[in-house]
Image 1: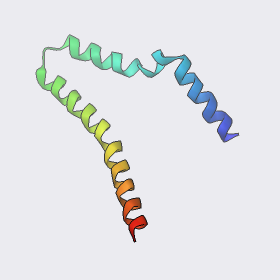
Image 2 (image 1 turned 45 degrees about the vertical axis):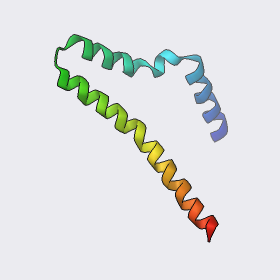
Image 3 (image 1 turned 90 degrees about the vertical axis):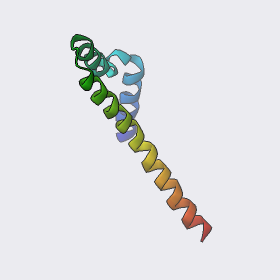
Length: 71
């Protein structure tokens, strides 16, 4: 049952990408409507932090596995 729900949600994301991209359009509208550069820099920094965290976690996991396999 869990696999079916996961499969349906995966195909829903593939078939309806506009639903997934809705937040990006909202951020873009906010940034285009304001002349405040600090807000734009803050949002850009937030995006970078959100992108970096999964990579750091995966790298940490691989390092842990590497150390366990080396012993």
